[in-house]
Image: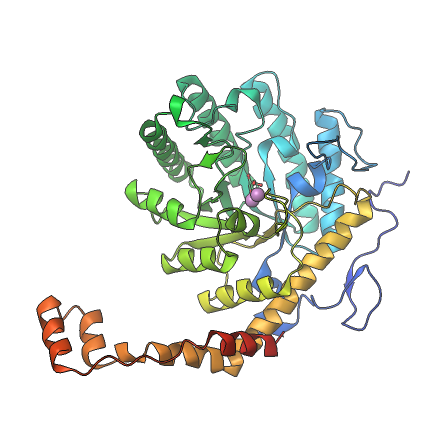
Length: 437
Ligand code: XLS
Ligand code: NI
Ligand code: NI
């Protein structure tokens, strides 16, 4: 076997829309300037280490199918270190600039916390070398607080104080390693921070504990001088019946109630939006309205299966909506588009990892070009502006400026004719958007 993990796969290049080469980009042209900056800076694409490198592709009815010839299947540190080089070869050939990881997907869990820390350090040594050699950077790190049996009833929301303390020790270390590797962010996804039944759950106490945990993390981050952005990732259910961080609105309310606004932004995942009964655009708009959209876990769900299927994003209508939000926000600062997505169990060959990511990157490139064209055209923006124009002067401006109360408004309504509204023109706008797709 050659030293390469993907010996038959060359560097993926942009060949344009007419190319029939499945291992080429048709739309993602990293240096092409769209809307004032190169494509790669709009997206800041990241590979999710857990899916790309660690997902065995099992489902509830059968074990893993993934063929990963560079991996000897053991939970050894040496195997984990070797895997780092396969991961970076993959990312380099694909041409992404970022990756994300959980502590326990890059390094094996030891028998004690001390041993786990040491394993993580040993793999972080390799990650640091590989980052230096390739220029690939860490978008964010995170800790796996859901796989080990000790977390079966939660981590920061476990009914057991010792579990909370263990989780704190684990997260402390994960933040330190993220800091050491120059991570631009750190994500909290509350794997099992929720409940299965209220018969055994003190909901208020658990939520207070979660807030305490996050405050401790914020304090520690400042103490060690880690300036990366903290994110919280909403998800409504799965694995628990009800997750506390269920959607953007719930997360924002939680952060506000506990004095954490400004300390954490949201990392929003498409499939989680769907599970919450929302569209991705809704979740993004809610976060943007609170100035709290930080990063995105790019994937897709299956409308026919009610799980977090974590599929690769291919729907150009959705990528267009996401890019419309990002362009209006002025783009990411610390965040990026992390492909929190896995290939299907049937797609077990290494090359499928390339097909999947190429498809996702091309889908976003098209979304960007379409969204930029919609904004440059101006009709969509103008329609929305016109729809709210009654707030620009007269009584609308007075209300917005806090210069009118109920008495003034009643007087105004009594003296005015019946209010006039115009059509919302939903269908016309849907047609307008489709003009560009
Ligand atoms: C799981 C989450 C997870 C987070 C990181 O559903 O999406 O992958 O992104 O813990
Ligand atoms: Ni995610
Ligand atoms: Ni998910």
